[in-house]
Image (tube, rainbow, N blue to C red):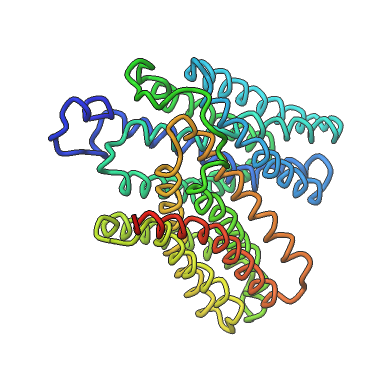
Length: 406
């Protein structure tokens, strides 16, 4: 059953995992979300081959920052496209070719400037695809399954961050950097093959009257502010946790090599937390923005807890707890955003969330770079992230309270 069949059978019991479109969406989304995690290691490998480790790290920062800057504009392009299926075909195929070109440029060690520009283009062109996959999910999933659908969306993101580095680590045994970048290129074929057929499949004439071009700008929708600001906060939290792990482990006398295991723990407990939230969401009476803020407080408390850890066990516990709350928090901010913006802004809004997550990551990285004491840096990351979210939530809570008095 998809969105159309549900409309035709309003009394039918909604389904998700057994629908004809679900597995196509899940596979397409996995391919859309796995590319950036793969880039973290693949571009370091390619850059090191071209000009040394520092250049590899620089390429990763270029890829991440450019993708974040371009995401909202790319999402707007999908929302306004008259033929979105053609747009995704052009975007996916062009991204495939660009990544192949990047692999070749790096292999032949052409100028660093050329490799850098190509890396930026590789990130900018497909920047709207992760947001598009979330928008397609909303288009097809029965409205009664919103919480479950977004829970699985968050899980797919975690799966990408688990599988991406593993795939690149396996390919690195060939000692051929171009193979790793070529593997990134293949992901866009997967996006087009699985997600492409779902895009624009719903006839324009069947869409509600409100789904028309020319909607007010995204930022004019105040109820969307908390979910957008929360994206900054969670970006700060994730980057703060992952970046601080090597230092925290060294401080406790453990090997920094345990960082990878703890990052996997972060993702694993996140999946567990999301499944729990998917089961309990329908029984929670609190407004979704209030739910998400409470969850964020738990996330930031675990970040602050990391600052005070003195043993490997306590570090692992804080990482596990943070993961248990971070992924459900991602689900909540997606639900909140979807409910607060019109359908014609969905892809732009979801893409903005990915962009603001990148902004939060950059802020967190800056704090960690400027403050040498890791405990002070983590406490500041938690304080800044919580303050940004609280400021945005206060505006909406006043509207909710005012609406409740009428």
